[in-house]
Image: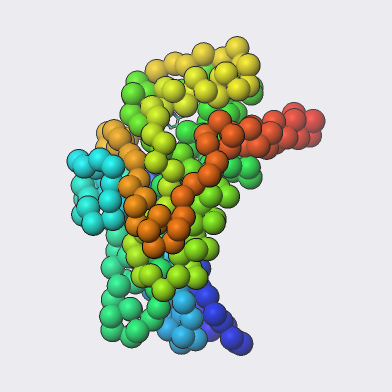
Length: 257
Ligand code: UDP
């Protein structure tokens, strides 16, 4: 990969990240994380640019410790359907450390936890987009496997602020960026139903994958101490502009059909 001119930063945000994609494009995901990351690291190396890798809370797999700190090595099922993404991102992190050690490439590794906000794809398949679209279209809200599993949702603007602070720091990472406010999937459904005033109801359907992590919550001590970062937008606040976006998408689709 050759690009003429000066390059200061190479930011690798590539890779399908929705669990529905893990079955749809598994080999593409592995190649993106492995070959794609190495090509971009080579580009950063050639230009002496700072390389930022979007990593993920999925490196912790189905975690056995709670909340997850960066020094926790994780619990990934190598043979499971999520491993294409989880191990792909773990490999990309290892590549970063190796380029840093062997070539002196400045790298930054951010571990992104569940993020949401305006401009998400309505058919993305992840929980916030599914529940918002289901609530707005009057469909049942699909709780996979019961809805007692937890996640911690970070508003997109908070995430971007965290990523920029990491990029402009001199800290290699990894660094968790996420909102530690943890809720069950069922509570998320109830919140979205309340905010939309929708007549939809939650229904329990089978889990997409057997390895669906049961709990997830970032420990953000490192981001607080090293970057002076913490999230500012609560779930309820962040869901309002997100729902506006999905209303816009829904009306747009309804009028063009
Ligand atoms: N989930 C759900 N209903 C949906 C989509 C997802 O109950 O329509 C659950 C999913 O099983 C998981 C959580 O919501 O426990 C978050 O799923 P998502 O796909 O958004 O991201 P993940 O954190 O699994 O990568």
